[in-house]
Amino acid sequence: AVEAAMNEDRILAVVTQKDDAVDAPTVHDLAQMGTLVKIKQMLRLPGGIVRVLVEGITRIRLMNITSMDPYYIGDYERVASEFEDDVELEAYRRLVQAKFGEWAEEAKSVTDEGVTRVMELRNPCELADQVAFLLPINNLKRQELLEELSVARRLNMIVGILNMEFLRERILKEWKISAILMARKAMVMPSALWAISHTPLSIKWPMKYAARVIMVTSTP
Image (cartoon, rainbow, N blue to C red):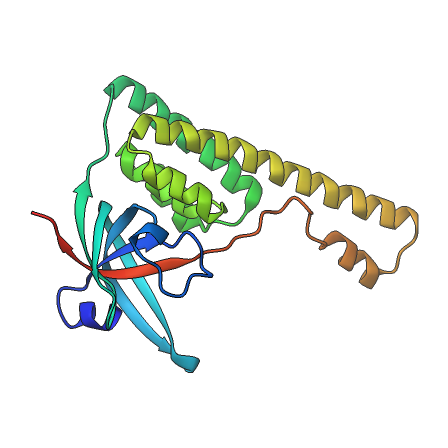
């Protein structure tokens, strides 16, 4: 599907597969809500692996799979986000950017360029999707954010995630500091101290992704 799209308009529909153990998923094995994307770059790696850089265009709803050979072909319809009260959205935009700044400062996992890009966004819908992309959340939570069409509710969900991630980073930092102090009191050798201070916290969430790329045609 990727190669076919590269030879045409570079447009793909990307949806999540519910269970990656299913080798030949039908439409019922795929998430109904996905993303229409444009391929920006394709890189071939050893072992037949293809890495693709894409840019999101809009949300889509998968309607049907019409063919599975040689790749998935299906029908979709575009889905628009729902914008509510402008005053409420502006308040949420500022709150999300403030919370994101606090979390990014604590986590140190986002580049300065990434932080600046988020802080400069004025469209609340784009802000919600950009922050969701940068957050270290699992695929189920990302799908929930994708399926939430209300921009206000989506931003509210992101505020909750940012609060939780900020707290997690604080706990992790305090745990590392406590481990270092305990190690110093016990006169642990530097090499052992490094191992203790870099042990991952047990509450760190695992991330697992299973996606299915579909060559699509729009539903009239």
